[in-house]
Length: 298
Image 1 (cartoon, helix red, strand yellow):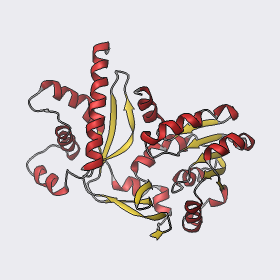
Image 2 (cartoon, one colour):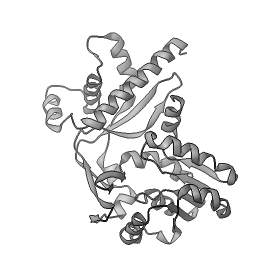
Image 3 (cartoon, helix red, strand yellow):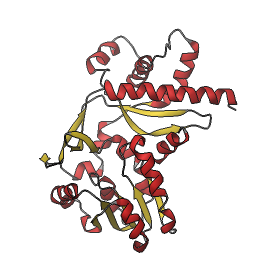
Image 4 (spheres, helix red, strand yellow):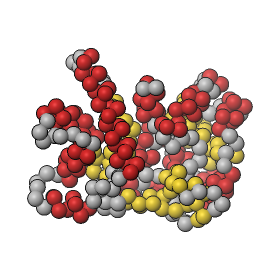
């Protein structure tokens, strides 16, 4: 059983690790290169995933070779943190296999593809929160280049469909049934996946940006096999939640309005205030476990 002293230790290390990883992911996510990995793998029998974890641990400042305390933290975090992902798993995702992206540039938004380099580090799922107080980030990498669809807002990557988006929507998709309402269109991944379910009769999508709606309808919706189930409403999410949501008698309400917890916590809290207006609906939120973790730290 974990004692209070250990929980305090893990709490401090959680913050340290998340800060260090944020610096790496935001500034040098591709510092581990394919050439470097190929060179050192020639001289070791260690698996690529274990080797990657050790390199990443050292990059965060852990001396896992000479400091037993650091080595213990390494084993308690990095073995569950680092994941070598299979390109084929995501390339065979129904959305990826069905929807082909044109390279389109509008006034504000543009559709295109971006790419993860081999061994580039990225967040690949929600924080894994353990009963002993550990909050373990989920970091993935591919051994081969991986291309993913993306929307740019004024040249800045804003919406995408990466392994992280796919993995963090699994529960929301699995639990969708009947009449579904979703706030936030993005690239339509959630709408696509739930519309494919026989148990889902309709999908109402609320999106406030007219240009992204027009791009989606013109270039993407026409490729959805069950696009007839999808109705897109041009409206602010919170206005719709306050004035129209209760009339729809939705079985499931899924909210995905944020980029990450930095911009999402206030929006998450605000949307939670409208749940009482539809007491029979099941409310779900994108990256809710991660959001709750950061809310506790405020």
